[in-house]
Length: 176
Image (cartoon, rainbow, N blue to C red; front, side, top):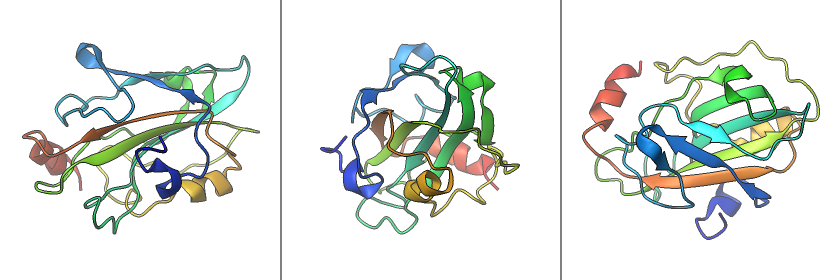
């Protein structure tokens, strides 16, 4: 993750393990590999080595909006789930519903970063961002979430890169 610039762009410490991320059709995320917005349009399955009885936070961000050269919206929140028991993502509390990659045409490759944090305690929030909402997704900071929720260093992570394809206008049309 350090070769991809994720350290220091988003976090300060390399995750201890690789999170396994699988999209429909058997498409898997491999560190830095390029995938298309069409391949990642639907919510993936994410697993990691989880401790029995522990709670986790799963976060996905794009630090390269609107482009890697000028990341003025760094970071865009693509997915946030808290209070995940073990690695049972479906049983966690969704704060921001999953939205796939939507890099603007001509902006090159964007990094899409998944981070998993072990929580020290249950997190309480009533915040919810639907998959059709733009509000609350732009210019967030992973470091702010780490501080606010007392998350510490990520225990697992992974990322892929994507650039514009024909699915992007369909995704953008769904966002308000």
